[in-house]
Length: 403
Image (cartoon, rainbow, N blue to C red):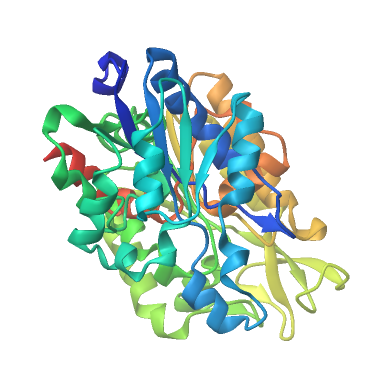
């Protein structure tokens, strides 16, 4: 049993870091997945007879306002989240307009058992991202117990995700249920994976995934590479890739990765063929090509039929699967088949007893889009955090609780 599950919150006020950084359109929440993911943690505290002070960030107010001058601070308020959370919980949710004001302190101290308070956007304060100790102390005073349930921000050494934990005894700081599940899923794949272990790495750039591939060379038996990054590997080996995405400055790195994999006995699977297009557009003319012979003026935007078949065979024979990144531009209907085919293979392998972890914004979006959420073992809520976890880095939000 976990520290959180064993802890009795009766009469305690818990300050809980959640990840309510949800997409908003004209003040309405368009995807409440992250809010729903925090409900088990919130409900356990309330059912024990505790009260809850929730804190989160929303967007990047300063940076986003600089890029889009029509935006104001009001566009980053968590008030709509408080309203939506009240509906999900079936009880009122109080809202503090200012996270560290005297009013917020008063609201927190007056909370009765079973009551919930949501603080406004932590990133209204530059001290949050700077990991300011004085700011973290003010937040800490709002609760008697600290619970971190925001895996999506665990890779940031921010005031509310890492520094705040210094103000609590070891017995009064812990992970929430979502954070525990994320860490357990990640550690199962990284440290106790059954072989064959296949990592499916997609996305646009080799440079974004270099560290995760290098770390997985120590763990995986097979690495499938898809998406735009595959063309850098083909160009490095002398292939003709037309106008497909390519990081010219990473050609040596691609060859080096292939060499390291060979030395370690790890099988790297590159897609043999692609669905190619004459422009980056869903209405483009399309064709199929072997990946060493893509004609000039054409670009690969999805893996082809041969790649789908060979990748699916590798996946279906796996006991452990990690999937991070799509196989093509799955947002466009013409180029979604490859990603869908991978999702289907992962679901089949899971049904046959494999353990599958899907993580990273685009992979999760694809799994949700194609309706496979319930057909894989675990869908992670962490994008950057999951990447850094699999790169072998220590995440500040995790380290702060464990020390």
